[in-house]
Amino acid sequence: MAADTILFCTELMGLRVFDTRGRKIGRVRDAALVPLVDANRIDRFLVGGGWAWLSIRYDQIRTISLKGIYLKDEVLTPYHADEYMLRMVRDLLDQQIIDAHGRKVVRVTDVTFSIRHETGGDLLYVDEVDIGLRAIFRRLVQGVLPSFVVRRLQGPIPPNSISWQYCNIVEPDPQRRLRLNITNQALEQMHPADIADIVEHLGPDDREAIIETIDTEVAAEALSEMDPDVQASILESLETEKAAEIIEEMSPDEAANALAELEDETSQEILDEMTDESKDEVSELIEYKNNTAGAMMNTEFVALQETSTIHEAMDSLKANEELLESLNTLFLVDSHERLVGAVPLAKLFFVAGSVPLKELASQTLIKVKVNDKESRITELFDKYNLLTLPVVDEENRLEGVITADDVITALRHK
Image (cartoon, rainbow, N blue to C red; front, side):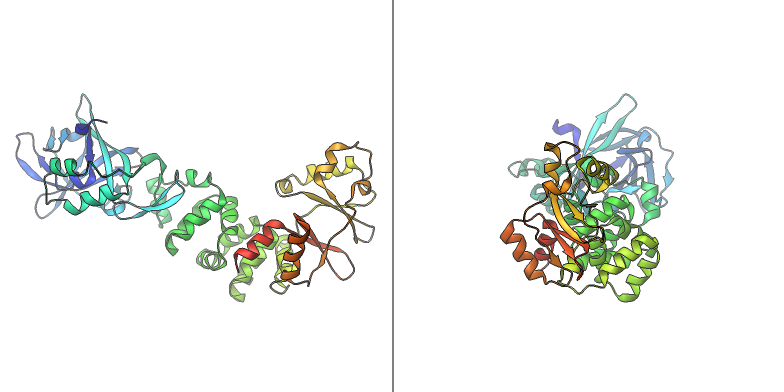
């Protein structure tokens, strides 16, 4: 991009504004987008020329350069605060934003605009958000050295910027977020672990704003990846109904772990907002002591009668499609729901549909009881290289399963 088509926010602020006869009427104090109209084009220039600020529309400008802004229309109006505006200095500079491309939280130190010379007049577009040393240098010498000298001196410093299309503005006020048309579409497409990392680096208000406005299922997956203290902080800050919606999207074991970190009263209020089925499932898991198999297990699994065939197993998998992403084992139970075998899912694809499942069961059935300690569980996973470990009660009835992910999470939280 040619140097004469670039303008930095540090240069724009303080730039002189001239009327149609070349008389100075003030200096630029801020510039604003109106995202509902155009997400990239600067719509208004706020000019301070005495006791009040004036508002200049983009279509009133003839030329924009380092020499100043020249108008083609002098019908100016006093500036009045408008919540539909995203102001560069007030709302963007020095603020934390989300770099959706780099999957991180960054602080804005400058903004790069491009000047587009159109037939009707020059337009200013936001191109990049600057976050590096070059932008900090410009800020430090702003107003001290002429712009052409600053540009020459900054040359050896590598630029560090983010394309405007990858920037996700964090706006805690839900009403203003709607007025600014801020969405989290780019954020929702990230891996939940990346969202969790980003949210953990934000302040409490910004964390709540993100979790409240992203898709509920995405919020649940991200919350599952966060440290327990951050989970608790977010859930406590949300409206009870919203917290319950998110908890219901989590797996029962993750939901129970999250609620266990809250005050009993808060936890109960969230449970009361949940459906009876989800509430009963999660409440049962909360009752188990910490660091036991019961507290670690997940109650989402597929169990079939020991007399079932491959064909029946495939039908059951189709009926439990939402579990397929994390499922690697089918469990066999007798007529009294007692665990009698485990079948690796991969074996189903190499035999005829009429073959009984019990013929494919692993020779050694490794299991634990609900009150077995976490140390024994991690030992079994390590010793036998397990992916899934069934959990049974005193009568050998299948209560749940522990996965390798559950063990990794438990170890990470230590």
